[in-house]
Amino acid sequence: MTAPPSAVLVKGKEPDAALVAQAVHQVVESLVDGRDPATCVEELGPTGVEDLDLARLVDAMTTPPFLVDRRVIVVRDAGRLSAADAAQLAELLAAPVEGVTVVFAAGGGTIPPTLQKAVAESGEVVDASVGASLKDRRTFVAARAKASSVRLDAAAAERLTAQVGEDLARVDGILETLASAYGDGATVGVDELAPFLGASGSVPEWDLTDAIAAGDAAGSLDVLHRLVGAGGRAAPAVVNTLQRTYLRLLRLDGSGARTKEEAASLLSVSPFPAGKLLSASKVLGAERIRQAVAWIAQADEDVKGATGLEPETVLEVLVARLARLHRAAGRGAAPRRP
Figure 1 (cartoon, rainbow, N blue to C red):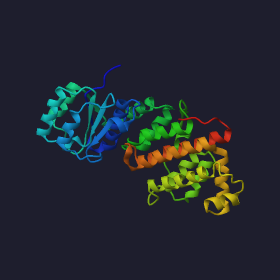
Figure 2: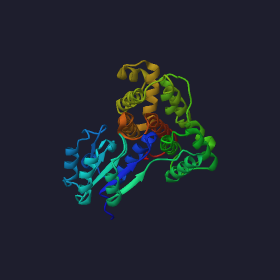
Figure 3: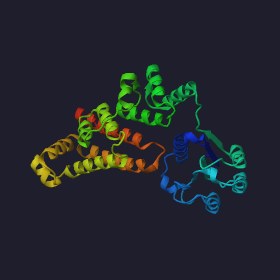
Figure 4: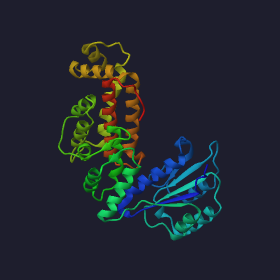
C-alpha cells in the first residue's frame, strides 16, 4: 500500500473557489480512504473548527496519529499565511511526522512561494483551475463525465458544457444527480439530461413530495428548481420540508394505523395528507424509510457547508435519490444502498 503524501496543495484561480472546495473534498476523501473522518480529520481556517493560527497548525503538524493510523489536517484559505509562517512550515515539511498529511487549500490571498515549493518537493500539487476558453470547458466536462458513474453521449456533453458556462462547479453535482436518477452505468442523452439543467417559477411544497412519491425523478427536479428559483425557498427550508415528511412516514411505520383517519389522529394533520403519507409509508417499508431519513440528515449538513457542493446541487442529488427510492419500491425491487 502506498503511503499518503505528507502534504497536498490544492490551488486554483480566485473565481474557482467552488472548484477548489470540491477538489479539497475529493482529496480528503481519498486520504481518509473509508475511515471515520471524525477520528482522523482536523480542519483549520475560517470554515474549520479552529482559526488559522500558526501555533495551532504547527502543533497539529507535529502531533503523531493517536489510536488511528493517519491524521489529515485541512488548512483553509492558506493564502492568509505570511512569508515567515511559510518558512516555518516548509521546515516542518522537510521532516514530516509519519502518518500526518497536511492539505493546504488556496484562498485568502496568494500562498507564499516558499510553501508552494516545499509542498511540491515533499508532496503533491492539485490544480483545480480551468481555462477560460470553450475548449478548456469542454475538456473539463469530458474529464468529469469520464470519472462519473454515468456516461454522457456527445450531444449531452455539449449541452451540459453550454448550460453551465463558466459555472463549472455545477458539473459534478449534475453528474451525481444523473447517477441518482438513472443508476450507475446509465448512458445519458440530451433528452435525459434536459430536466436536470434547471427551471423557473414557484410551486407549493406538496408538489415536490407528491412528485417524489410518484417516483418521478425528472418531474421532482423540475418542481425543486421552481421551489428554489429566484425569490424561492432556501435550501435548508426545503430539507426541513422533506425531513418533516419522512419523519412522519417513520412514525407511521409499525404504528398500526390502517385508515387515513387513524393516521390523521396520530400525526395531528388533516385526513387527506394523512392518507397520502399512510400510502407512502406502506409502499416504502421500514428499511427504505430509514434510508431516506439518513439521506436527508446528511443533506441537512451538506447544505450548511459540509461539502464543496452548492446547496442546490445537494438538493438535486437528494430529490433524485428519494424519487428513485419510491420508484424502486413501487416496482417491488429490493432495497439497496447507492
